[in-house]
Length: 294
Image (cartoon, rainbow, N blue to C red; front, side):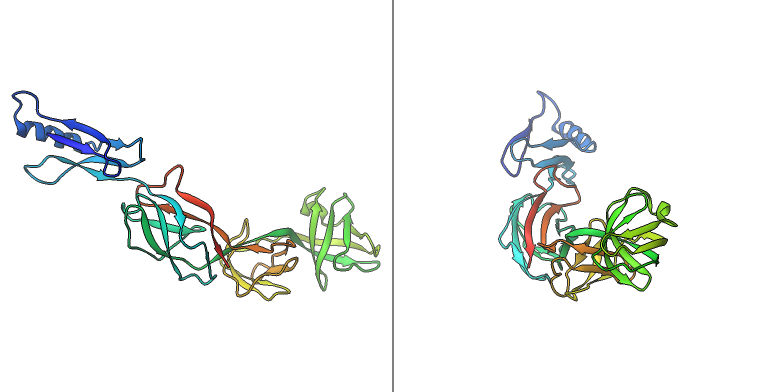
């Protein structure tokens, strides 16, 4: 006779015994043949998942192999330093199954140990921060004549595009366009007119510059230094110091430039997720905003 039960809640999946006058060896061999097809037993009560497998014993029969995906429900520590390296305990379900991977903002923890069904110890990875971008600047080469154009001055193109100058370096202007009535290519050879100075500039070059993954970025007023992890939206590894509200952040390699929001300039709030080689649960695999890098 066999009885296959959920190891979490005890729910019975299968109870079977040889038929009358059936050879027990034949009964066992039939179940071992069934195990080769690995039928799944899913528990509706506790969401455990198991497959019927051969127990590996010549005179044995079958067993349940746990292939449950994990769930995360809480953390005992919810704030930590941007350098990471601190240990905390997560709670959940099926945390002992397979190779457990715990991620903070998609970055896996290097150490996951002391695992039980409902707890695991993890060492938090180095921080990532979401940079709260207010404006993405375009890089233009301008020939200004007559007059001058100034930083923070509004400009309007011949076609009606509107923007604000955020940085000037010689003939190079970084402009945050609130409205583009034409493409950047169509802007070349046309004019931009200053809203205050009345200066007029012909557009020589106009490009949209994007941040590069793994490039360094620097806050132009705070001096905060970080490395880009994701370009859109802009996510960086832990900065050397906090970015300042309203400041410009510039890519050291790409020369991309953005202006940050007034508050907060960046966020260390991250999601924490769990998975194993059997996948992720449709619900319960992640805790949105569960941890904050200070």
